[in-house]
Length: 217
Image (tube, rainbow, N blue to C red; front, side):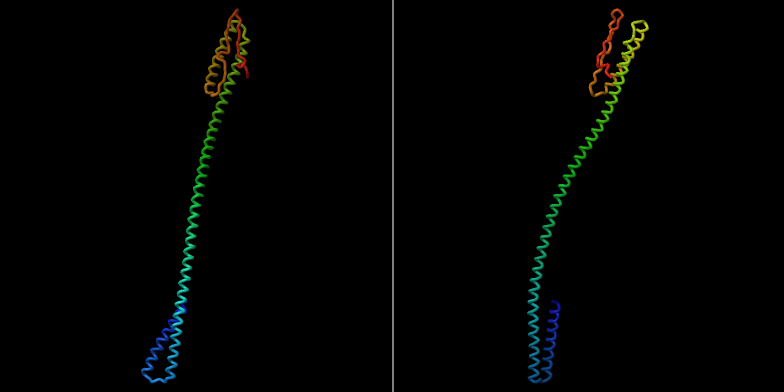
């Protein structure tokens, strides 16, 4: 397109120079009719060529403008579609981000719940261990009390046996206090005798009353 335009401009310049030369020659010299007619024909031919070039340039310009306009419209449509697609993708991404944030929130809540459950289980384990230790302590005290009671049942009613009896009674009281102290920290209910022995002296005979659950191992 630029080459055609440049060629037309050169032809116009050449035509202008030729007309100027013709005017100069006509003024200075008398030319023959044949030479003059040939020169006019050449000038007319150049003018027609220039007009055809101008027409061609106009047509090419119109076509070029139409092509440019069509291309611009296509580009605008493509740009509009791109903007619309981008907006749709952004909206979709925002929805996905919101969904991911919701999922993350749910996971965080579940993690916190599980962590609290783990901490609670750890506390329960610690409490259970303490309970087990207390139960074991109670069990040991009951075994000691049982051994004391077994020894006490074998005591004869004599002065020496009476001293041994009182000594064993003191041991029973001490063990009872330790038992109460040990069971005070238990959350579960443990039945233990308030009094495992009752003394009823009738004719120097000692009667022993001992519940069955007290002597169980």
